[in-house]
Each structure stands twice: as structure tokens, then as C-alpha cells.
Image (cartoon, rainbow, N blue to C red; front, top):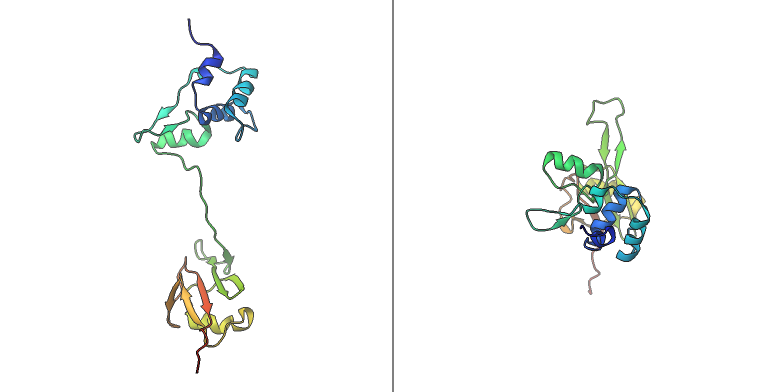
Length: 175
């Protein structure tokens, strides 16, 4: 005689139970305790295979919930782990709408001076040219030093995609 449905569910991890909830369309379980999730699953009619399906172990031994949505299916077909999270920040400006694909936009980079900052399409420009161009907008001091990605650079440094530019006023000297 097999185990009861509740006993089978109690053997699963919270992550596996949440994956089953997601597969079954049961919402609001992402932060619930295991007993609450099991109660919710007990109230629904689960297909026999879902109640008995176990987690898959990856080569590293990490337990992965089985059958989690469309992304998992595509990843399984490609034999790779699915991407579950990505964080990035990007800003592009449509500068040449009639240009060929790939040349229509210019990516903007973060430029700051003190409390003033903004994203500007200055890739390919020198730090000195940007300082002059944004002198009024960001209140860039004529003696300010350019820092790209945290490193001091000369005014002739040409900005590349992914750079961040900060202008720092030199500290006062006793004289």
C-alpha cells in the first residue's frame, strides 16, 4: 500500500512544494510555511504524477524542483540550467532612427559631479570634452578631476560603453 498524498507532500522541500503550486496555478505561496502550502495542495486535485514527482539532482548535487514552467522545459531541451534572475541597468537614446539596425541608438552612461548626476550619450567622447559640455548642467568645476569606474583618468581618456564618469573637485590646500 502506497503512502498517502499528505505523506508524499511532507517529504518534499518547501521549494519543491512551491514549484508544484506554481505548476498547478496556486498563487500566493511564495512566502508561506510548508504546512500552509501542503494544506493548499491538499485542497486541490493534483495529478498523480505531480504528487509523486521527486526533485531532480544536478551534477553539483543541488536539488532543483522538477518541471517548473516553460523556462525549465526550454532549458532541458538545450541541456542547460534556466536563467532565474537577471539585474541590469541600461539607457539608450534613439539618435539615428533612419540608420541601419544596430546603429540607431546610442547608449548613455552615468555622469556625476557631487550631488548632480544623469545619463548622457557621451560614449566615444573624451572626459575633457564631457566636462566642458556638462559644465553648466552638472556644475563641473574647471579644476575637477575625471574618475572613470573609480580610477583617475586624464582629460584625453575616451569613454566606452559600460563606463561611469564622476567629476571630483580637488581638495583645498593650506597655503
